[in-house]
Length: 217
Image (cartoon, rainbow, N blue to C red):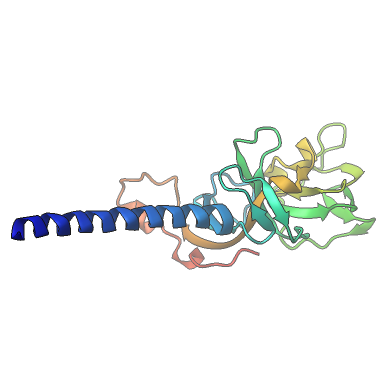
């Protein structure tokens, strides 16, 4: 009897562990699908706001409810506004996720004149914009410094990287569909210099402690 009781208890413990693991996995999937997801920054297109090696959290719930696994927007309840830093599916390759800043929304007339951003014919004081070059390219040479004017269609946004002279964004490939927005970046949870070899002692020294916990604006 003692032996049988021990086997029953052993099976009960195993079942409890399995149930706990299943619940944990389902909970993690729900959180990742509906609420928050982690991303990392691989390029310098958002410098100096976001640095290469930054790891951030994205609020996936802020703009609406999405379908599990497919990510399709089911119930939208808020639209992105100018200044939001968003993660979205790259229109030219939907398997790639991009992160940029929203500079214009549906109905906005956008124009760039000699690096100056114009929205609805008024110059925007863009405190996040960073320029590394004083060279101004003509519209025929590149849309980088002179672009438009164009009006953002309904259901679309126009995005740009904060590192304006080194960002591949809506100036080059067009608008982003709001249904392709995965969420809004809101906080840094980790940051270090990924150029430092992973197994190097100096990798720990490259941790940017001052950036951890920083709210993304």
